[in-house]
Image: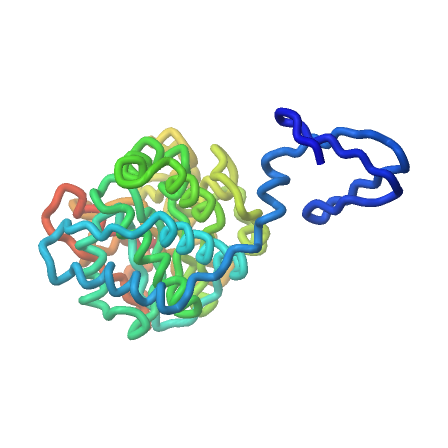
Length: 345
């Protein structure tokens, strides 16, 4: 190989083939060619060769991240850039090995948005039990707004790696580069590390699953229903890794909102996706033989239909929920309202 600027010049003296990440290029005797190597192809040659994080290193990361619960709220835990990259790369592989629509069993604790409120996350585990004493499903929005998005997402990824069959993370609308570039996570990564770290998290977020089905009866996602969702197999077949589009099924699963006074589908004040009425919830549940849709994305505090932190969006208010817990924390801080999220019947 002779490198000249951004080109690689290859002169071959015999018939041979170059294999690059599964792509074959054949060359004939004496022919002089130039191979333009795109960054994606260069990355592809090393993809999949990441060394899994050592179990002792992982345990030490979890220990450091959790021992600050005994210190003052807001105390930072400074991991190394190498440790963060290992967490992201290992978790990314696990996400891709598991389905886009997780199929889980009760009992399991379902948790709404954390948004960088690390002290709330630690208190949540103190209240509900630190893994693996309890199974957890988080519904997304781990970063932005709060002051400790890095500690929050690193602990969640560490637990996912440690207990892949008992600890589950779904994607929220803030696990998206175009959103967390604006609402705080990018700035936190840049201030405490560099932009490279933010990009590593972005690659990891693009692989998160987007929905979970508990006991074939409870459908969970971050946002809500979609007019494009006709069969659950459509969720299973959504591609990963992927960015979040501006429209369509994936967008709606992460962005849509219920509206008690809405009938059918309506425009969303967020300027993206839709609102859906109780009629659409009932129609969806009946069609798919489900009992409940569980989602996050909105605070229910101050709403007239609030019941112990649960928002109820249909007539089936007397339905019994068994083996399901939604644990919410509130510490009176500016973002603590994010801790109380919505259940949809």
